[in-house]
Amino acid sequence: MMPTLGLKASTSRKQIDERLQYYPSVFEFYTDAHDVTPAGLAHLEEMVKYVQSAGIRHIVIHHPMAYDHHHNDVAVSALKDPAGYQFMMSSSEALIGLAIKLNIQVLIHGGYSEEKPVIDAFGDLKSARKMIFARLDYFQKIGGEHVMFENSTSPAFDYGDAGLENTVIEHGYRLCYDISHGFIVLHGDNDKLVQSIARLAPQTVHYHFVDSMGQHHDSLQLGKGRIDWQRVMQVVNPKATNIYEIDLADQNDSREMRASHQYLTHLIATQNKA
Image (cartoon, rainbow, N blue to C red; front, top):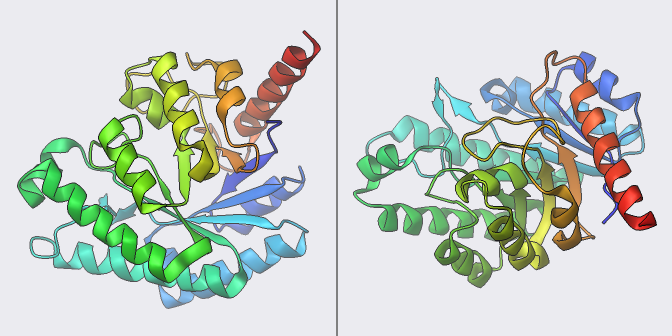
């Protein structure tokens, strides 16, 4: 697979314009809680149309990661945190509705919380996963080809876990595979990472390319971590889209994402000449 230039930004016009000057093929919106208010949704729709007017067809909206200083987690207890549950459901439904209207994609993250909060909420990991899959089934039913689900470093929804991957495959989900998340879950094991990516490739429609040392969530520029990108690129789905989800020194400057694209493009070009 030859990667495309995929960039990420908030709904800030300044950030969007900075990204658009480099003519990305894929654009992903990072949203927050304000973006799913009535005013925020109206602005988000305007910004999506603005990006579309630049000729970009592949647009993804990443659901809000946080609500009221807490993770916006699919694994939220409706009984113990009704406000959090209501936000998670209503924001996801609103974004799916917008995606259908504008013919774009919504990315819903399968989990954020570490194991203890999940178990505290549901009693055990098995029960938490059962609830997560029920909710993802619902989002898939209403979103169809406009919704995808991203893996986490949380045991609630972590690619690299064979049991969870089996269930994901059985449910036929459209997937976003965050490469660094898989690497962290597998404790920096490139062999197991490649196996996981290959196994889920037929259902993967979008990738987050981001490097890592494999110990914790570090969101490194490609080439700065320990992921074997030559091997990874041999097993990804060539029909999928991608962005570079890298920590930026300045949110108004996408240079670390663009440098990652240059690194990966050069790596593959060199490999093809060998």
